[in-house]
Image (cartoon, rainbow, N blue to C red; front, side, top):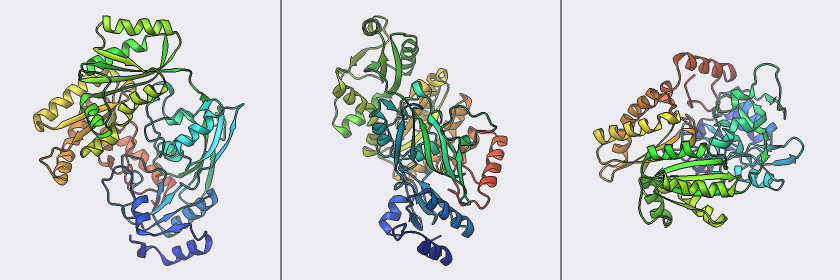
Length: 468
């Protein structure tokens, strides 16, 4: 559907019932709002709607439902699965103007925010009161609360705090036909039947549009120590994790790992240096809230004595902590800046990670010798980011054709080890064809039935997750 194909009475209703700046069809705006960070799909929306209120969202969706116009909800567009891509003439519904932050409730430890609020802005707002919304990842400066909830985002602190859904008390959602639902308010306990919030958390905008949320907050953590360790391989990463988890001297906030291939690309792109003289197969970034400084020191010394690490460093102050975190948080950007990565975001039981990584490496060495695989992720909660880098000898089209053939093999390994083909990025367009590797036919049938019930005309983010 081109912009010219939008129904004339639909466009007339928009021009008569909404502010002058509500809709844009400027080519550059269409290009920007029609894509996300995947950069795989060519953006081709018909228009971009920029509401300021839930009422405007409601009236827009009612019109789209009436005229059969497809809508793609849009937040910060930081997704990596094509969930916010508008490639078939849809109207993009951007929530970026709906970014209001409500007052922090210091008795209930909650805050009400609009869906377009940027994650980092919420963090700063709550930190003024000694509180935090502990959903945290590298894209926090661009991602929005609505997008986080719609994808049930994970991030670097899941090992301590869990996924986004754990920190959402209430939702305001607009349905496909424009009805406004207020779900659960600010209640911690509400045992009155099915919790309808959970239908929309992780639904990627296919069942309704989140416009506001009541977020659950927690106290800011105490002093965080940040360590970077060098270890030889994934097996050593997991041995160190098991040992760290058994300690009572600190509480783990993040346990991240990356390979030397990742580190070398970060160094090349960001001009950063490694804190270690010698290279190592893998690295672990540990952030922890210390409870007993002397016991932590003793534990650090024992790591070398017991052969659990080959090298290590502890940040001395906030500046050094930021430098160590930059080595981890700069990976995704650096991989894209220094080559063309084919990205996969998978999860496995932690106990199965070592075998999976070994089998994956063996498969690629056998079928695609010389290809570079860059592994990193939130390994403490079983989340692995697999990035296959394009060899110089292949053009983009050839490379993508090869990776399309390789993905099913990888997903068979994921299924073999009882994992998921998407840990935190969602399904979107990118993984829709592979959903059967993680979901049974019975589950898929139920998901389709829910979609048809809540969006009978199929106007909400059509083609994402599955086809109804």
